[in-house]
Image (cartoon, rainbow, N blue to C red; front, side, top):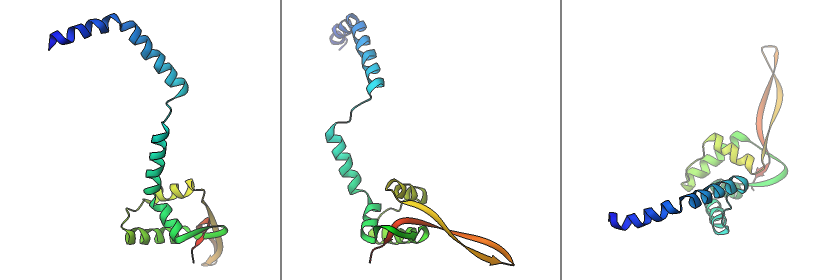
Length: 136
C-alpha cells in the first residue's frame, strides 16, 4: 500500500505551494463574499420549515390577524398548549414561543388599569399580543 501512496505524496509535495495559494485565495474570497447557498437547499429548507411550523398551524386554525385585535398573552399560551396536546405536537418553551410570535410581526403591549388595595393605588398591567383575535 505504501508503494501506491508514495507517487501521490511526491506529486503533492511538488504542487504544495500552488495548493497552499489556492487554499488561501479561496479563504480570502470566502471571507469577502461568504458562501452562497444553492437554490435547491434554500427550497428544501423552506419546505421543511413550513411543514414543521406547528405554531403557524395553530395560529391559522385558532386565530386570525386583525389590525385592531388583541389577545391576552396568557390566554394565547393556554390555547396553544391545549392545541399542542390535542395534536400531539411538542410544545415550544415560553421563550421560543414569544420569539417566534415576534418574528411573525406580532408585538406585545402592556395594558393596565388602576386598582385600590388598602387605600393605596396600584397599577395592574396585563400583557396583550396585538394584531390577533380569536377565530370564530
